[in-house]
Length: 219
Image (cartoon, rainbow, N blue to C red; front, side, top):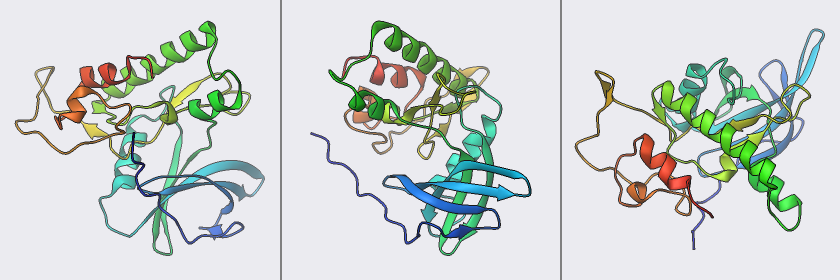
């Protein structure tokens, strides 16, 4: 059985203003590295809901910084949230991005008998592979692929589109002459034990084929 990592708690309140244009609506998620809130954005005649992800501490290179770098690299590519800006509030760094959801886990848990139709499974599978191909094309390996990191768009324009999220553990692949260079030494375990590949459990540095193997099975 997986032992869930400790969940980060942040000392922020609903209704609190973040920067000049964001007001916290509610907390919609939390993990080992940060918490995410839905916010109301208001500026001149523009009003909309966005997502803000917080990480405690003001160190320059963090999981949140890593996520920002990856989101910027994926700008304009289907299956990835729009990135808007970064900032600092109290003792937290934050990034602002497109609001998405629910996750695949939440969708499954809303309906009985807790399974997708064949059509839904194929749609998810195809779009999931497309998202992985896109992030690999940009030179990154995600290192924490799992159902909870796939979400659905929640607007008229994005309904039916699956998105890959949460890039704090993402790593840029080392490539030479079009070939991925495998690191000479193994690293630490990265990911979620239930969904991780054999390579991840062996504490090997992950490459593209390990991502596919880790999730190409029934769970």
